Image (cartoon, rainbow, N blue to C red; front, side):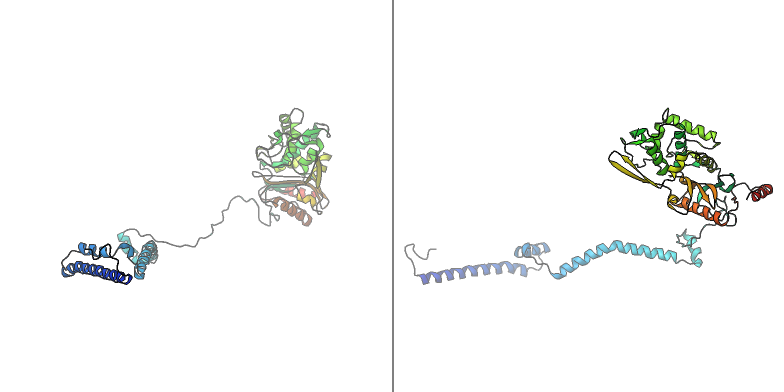
Length: 411
């Protein structure tokens, strides 16, 4: 319905009034429509839940749904209950175990009727009883030194009298004590000591992969290599000496075994010149013979007891020290020495030294501990200074009365 003609333009105040009237009519019509829709829902209580929900959802959109604090609290409590369930099971299991442990003796019959019951019994562990096996070291009355070395031998270098013996006949790996025999056969060949020898890749240790500062390409004289092999136990130096032996490496090893046989070292065998192989084996008794024999070589005595030395390789100067710590001890008068170590042989040491004016040969094999062989040498020296009597441990044959009387006469 058109109230005004298109050509009629009312005043500005009248237009506002008309707008207010139209807006009032629109609001009235909307209110009446809402009341008409709400009346049937209120007057029909038998309506299904689905239709009521549909009516509510039509007037309450999901976007306007609010979350209260109570709803959040319920959700948090539910999550805590879910997370707490495994812990409750563990606690229940722990309580079950405790109930099993608390079972007493009178209740065992009832449980036996139902079947075996697992019980947790805590016992105090006791140390095992000592096994009476073959003694490696004897009691204090028979062996006051209590050596840590597996084999030991102390003899008089002049009279060859045995002063102390411990498993001296056991065959063991001898490690770098091998280099004493290598030096002996090299000197027996009478090659020029000033002859230059080059270190090559053949001298690199491929058995133990031991380190060395002698690089392939460095050149040293035979005398310098001999000094490094005896003083600092340089493996590449010893191998280079054997490689340049007349006839090569194989000829040098053969000469080492021949010389051992000529010295009466019946339980000694060499397969390489450095001692890195555990198949280089000997006994304390055989090594005492070797120390007595190589004492006749002045260069072996000098180089083995040299405290430190510097060698020149091109533009490099290499400093080396003696591997025997006793050489730096002023309380020792050492005439000849050699150390050795590999895992299979333990720590080894041979000495030709003077104690209380007496020249003695000391052989120590298979000492476990970085300084155990040096400590054993100190114990032997202290024992000789305080006692000096002949001592045989239980592991060696006990001498007869005539032999003991002869020993007393010799002293």
